[in-house]
Length: 75
Image 1 (cartoon, rainbow, N blue to C red):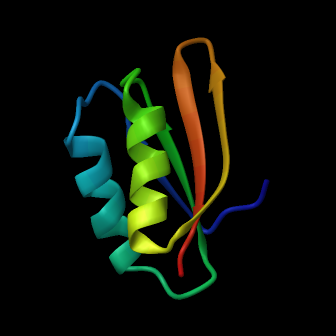
Image 2: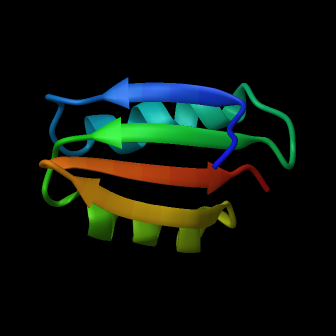
C-alpha cells in the first residue's frame, strides 16, 4: 500500500505509539496516509479505538513476525 509518511514506534508501549501517531497525523494534510510500525501487542485495540474516536480511517492492520503494521488515512 502506498503511504506518505512512515512512523516507527517499535519498542514503545502504550500510550506512546498512539501519542506519536497523533502528533504525526497532525502534521499531515487531509487524505494523506501514515504507515505505522509497532511492537506493542495491545496496539491493535488502541489503534482501532483511536481511529474511531478521532475520525481518522484505519485502512489496514496486519502482524508480521511480531511487528504490527497500520495504515491510517488522515481525516
